[in-house]
Amino acid sequence: MAAEGNLSGIEIRTIPMGRITDQKTKPIHPWPLRLMHWVNALTIVMLIGSGWQIYNASPLFNFTFPETFTIGAWLGAGIAWHLAFIWLLMLNGLSYLLWGFFSGHFKQKLWPITPRAVLNDIGAALRFKLPHQSGVYNAVQRVLYLGVIFAGLTMVVSGLAIWKPVQLWIFTDLCGGYYVARYVHFTAMACIVAFLFIHVALVLTVPRVLPPMITGGKMPEVQS
Amino acid sequence: MNKLDLGRRKLLSRALALGAITTLPGCDFEDMAHPDLADRFLRTMLDFNDEMQALLFNPHTLAPTFPASMVTNPPRFNAYYDISMAPVVDPATYQLELSGQIQDKQSWTLAALRALPQEGQITRFVCVEGWRVIGQWSGVPLGYFLHRIGADTTCKYVSFKCADGYYSSIDMASALHPQTILALDFLNAPLTAPFGAPVRLRIPVKLGFKNPKSIMQLAVTNTYPGGYWEDQGYDWFSGS
Image (cartoon, rainbow over all chains, first blue to last red):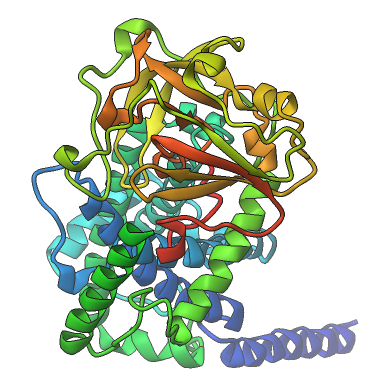
């Protein structure tokens, strides 16, 4: 019995050892995520730039966006760029949502979020004491990522509401009518731009997080 | 046609001026006669978007209507020229000319158009620029008119030519939509010169620039007629 126990003990040890070895070669960011991230980066830049050109034709507020930062030299071109890239954005966004759900990515990385953890991590971040753990999202990241997914969905719904207020009236009604839908669209854009500023600022602060988003990187050996 | 040439020339000079200062001359529909790679990509996507919009179009979906208290008054003028340049058409001698796949191509006087059944609507006019106004128009339902003149409604396009050289065209399904009318009145009074007198298209299932004013000619055709703005890069279907 003792010998068997020892034997099985050895076996039990070797199996998880093997699994740990597997985990070492597991990338921080799997290839579908990296692909969708960079496709998204391109589409977001194109859509914001062309969106600003469209905004300038009939500004909602007392300012227009400088021509340097707009895409499409006039309204017609701005709309053409906007409506060309919207399909790529929706296709990519849908792929991301499906992949996130079925691969377990959302469940593993974005959940759970507790108010206590968020407050703790915000406090730590403000004191520059929030450590970066490769492959693990802290509570602030989880809130921001979920928030930007929600902003993206709002962007698509309000965009469809503006694009087709007659045929897609359900979306227009959901946004509070055509007039309000433009403000919803603008606000969601502003949230995404704010996210991008934070996102890029954090990458500049911790530059070692950038290469894994291109190459995939490797999960660190110690995970707990 | 003179106005159109002027528009093209203006566009060309603007393209040349911009081309001098940008690194991508000719890009972004600045010179439609010489499309570059970006222009060809955008043109492909515009065609794709037109097909998607045609698929999305439901002939039974009505544009929302509004109470009279919400009508934007005074209405907002919009054209590619100043309001003082708006064409003035003499209603007494006005004739709506018909051409293309139509059995009875006799021209229509304003009085004859007024003798046809009239329908009114208070609908939202959405401009491609993003602003919107609400107006009260009434006139002859285009679907009724097309049947009355014996138009071949299996044709793809209905096209319009205007007194100011403006031109546009719409798909047959949208032309037959119950809210598409040849408007004669605004707020129960005849249209005024800058707002499309004597006859304009009012089509709430499309963007504002697809509502041509001061229509002089109507044609039914299978040959793509394009449009003033459409030829410069706005998407042709432009449904709302």
